[in-house]
Image 1 (cartoon, rainbow, N blue to C red):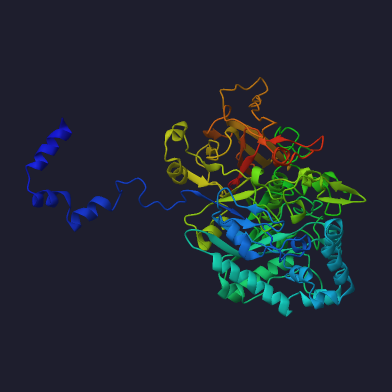
Image 2 (cartoon, rainbow, N blue to C red):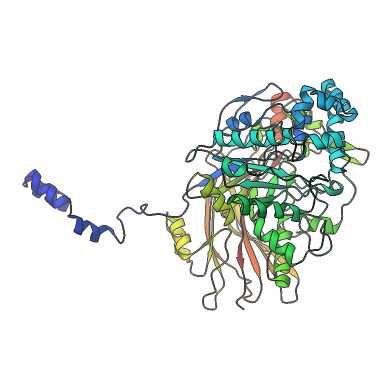
Length: 640
């Protein structure tokens, strides 16, 4: 009745008087709208949706990618990431199911540009005996090409590359500068602020003794700054494998150009435990105040999952974690040297690194392993595919075929890494305010990122002291999270009162993907005795399951049909939201917390190969898995 009365009154007024009453004067409008707008979405300053991308991809310009037959250059890689259909190096049509929002193209800097010249049989390459040998192997194809490619990689890792070739494709050489310019200008051509962000970057390729200590570098800048310097290499006499050499280059870049740069540590698998040193395991020097300060400054992000294995946790390190045994690689290095030791594994996995960071912070006052989480493909095909049903492999040699499941990734006299162990992973989600180089780069610096093994799971994680159970009832969860707490990647604000920290968590399934099984909080801390501890808490789960007497939640089940490589979302749930308080909080203990969101079981890529090619799968091939997302941590530091 009230609305009807208003309508009748309005009709009795002249149009002019209606307009006068409806539109306030400037003074009235200023008073009415200056404090709180009617629209709940107005004046928001926080990121509202995750932007999806890949921080690690190689084209045919990279030494190893090109040696294995990748003929696609940066233009094809950028067009593919933006959603265009391209033809792979093996002649197959390929397209992403959904375009990416951004990407960093990271071709290897050492011998950058050599591979295309090898493929073309350039005179400068053929003039060297080794260059001629590699060219003939490449042209022969098949096993001979693979042998030549691994010989190139072996000579690179052992620092026995021919001097003539090294001199022709290192900083100071025209070929090196030309290739860098090609990379920079291609990124600029495809950068489309607001729609797609193309970052200029590279991979610094340190492999002392074959141990993988690679870092990927992302520049915030365009060509005016990026072309003032050429990227660093690791092969002497032109470079050094010590990460401090990379940190020095980053410092010089910022000072000389006025630009900004960050480095991302490569997934720790194959580093023989050297990726996260503590005191005496660091290649090139001792872990001291200089080292921890430089690493904390330049490496705010870690590649926790990729094609060469998942690096969040390992069952040896986390025996109480039932989900730690996921896509683990635990060989020593690229030569598959038998170096499997307790110390090796502890120096390779993200959770252990986060714990070690607490210990080093206690000692030096700086935490060098205070990183955000991210995923990447590390594909050497120019194709950023992390989808199980659209997986184009690690290299051209294992692009889709009936035999690739049984084609070893690496094989030598010491053993092999079977082809079915390759992982269709991963992507990084960034909570950025806009799709630009500046906004995404700044999100990396504040560590407001999370990793997935491929699915586009939505994940929010906030920490604070004032969250309540009623906060999960709002549909404006981010408003509450940013108002009452801090987002993933942050330090908790100073403690209020005597209570424990509380965390607001929300996970939403990929709109075209699988339901969620559960959401967990992983906690690590340094106890009063100086020992490093960890615990995994189930905080929300699907299907009305009830914990047993030990607190364990029953398995969610499995709907995968092996014969059709399909599943149904008849188990699990689309959304999980919770407020969780740490029941074991010690206000005197340094700690970190991160979220792991886990899907219901779905098919691995090998099952799709069986369906499409009739591939004969290895007897022990894993056919299903539970994909997941990892948030960046939130840290707690006791008051002094």
